Length: 296
Length: 296
Image (cartoon, rainbow over all chains, first blue to last red; front, side, top):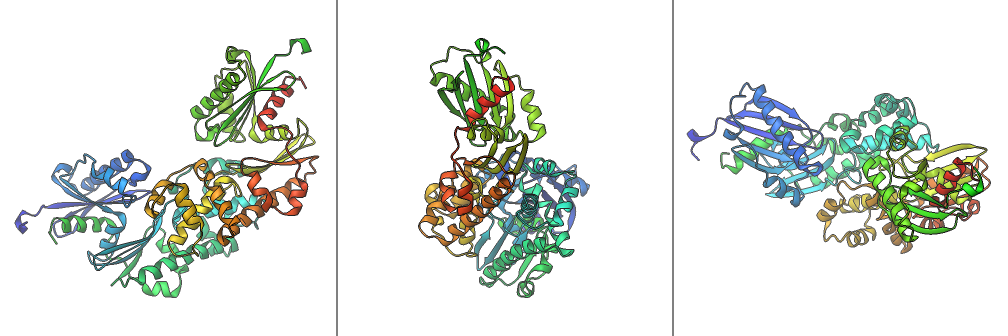
């Protein structure tokens, strides 16, 4: 495709378990606007995920004062959690989407492309979920990404779940009292244990991810139970980092909403292997779309 | 109420997280028929729970060859999981039910009444969920019953979840391999890890409860990881037993689908405190209804 035929604008969208983030960029990758909407993981519902993708794109265009350009005129790169499962990749691929063209990748791949500005490397993701991904010599490798509540150790949802578990066990008198108990009751605006059990019942990963800070707040005040939870989570993230490092990625970054709080608890070895991400995942989605078009 | 005005038949219904069981009995408490239907915990949906209650009652009447008697002519005692939460108790209480009268209690209370044939005592329940309950000197006491995935340690769902977690961690190379891996893949008819992650995604407690046997099968073949899981679960159940024993119940029983497999792993002290349940929970529901009517 010749340069003078390049589209003027691109959309990049990153859909995760808690929210969907979009950027609209100019052809030189300058961010013109951003938008955020609801959960974008199709595992928790095709309709919710596709609605979130569209909504985040519209918000980004509005933010860029480009609301008069129809989605049907813009090419979108979209990275989604969940589409590492072939069934969900096929489901989203068959979506009658509103864009001019849609290029679909996993959230991991666009995060990696973003963190290393289109280059190869590895990323550790600790947001609502947790996982590791490397892309080296054209080969993709994934560790973790198993989901909630059985996997995703060291993630926001995992930390929140551990807090709830320990608080409930301390109510039973099975473990020592922890200052996470008053923190959690306050955070959830509960006046007693019965209310706590009711509020927690049947909640998804995104709910538990919001409770992760309770563990870090308590640990920073010296709570032994909270510290022990963080050590278990950090141990898993350290292990993932080592596994990714063994693939010899040129660069490695840690991203996701929990990364800033978790980083100080990781081993010196792990921290020495990490570099700052260069761009956010949604920009990685733009780079992915351009790569598929042969534009860069 | 005079004896000659006593109804001829009573229904007793026990609604749990995985299924709803009903008995129809004669006025001298002889079981004439039984019925089983789907999940009966209103936490997972009012409509499903109430449909299951009605269906189990109809199956029991059919089994007793009493299908010509309308539900509107029969008094039912109903014990349900979840209704220890006031919100759900009120929800079920306002149900336009099909019975002549419905007396509602928690699944714990009817299980206790059943196990001790209407007398006081305590029960440990290890089925899909886990909890302990005592009724001594007219006072009810509950331990556990916190729900999945954050509570219910030592329950079927908890054991199944631990199996899934350990198998996924062993895939990541974070823990030693376990023979639970091939057992779990076979049980779920999965050919590889990706298929396993897909099958497990978003599943409820009742799904994980079906995986509990994988842990016991593996432990019985000497698997160290599986044994360690059982020891953790057993530790919690031993603790619950001691807490209940401190209430001085005249009798204590262990019930629920997992009880036969878990019992051999409990401490000698715990086992010495347990007596066989005299009647199933659904008979306890009948005894509860009759007690409310002043019939016994």
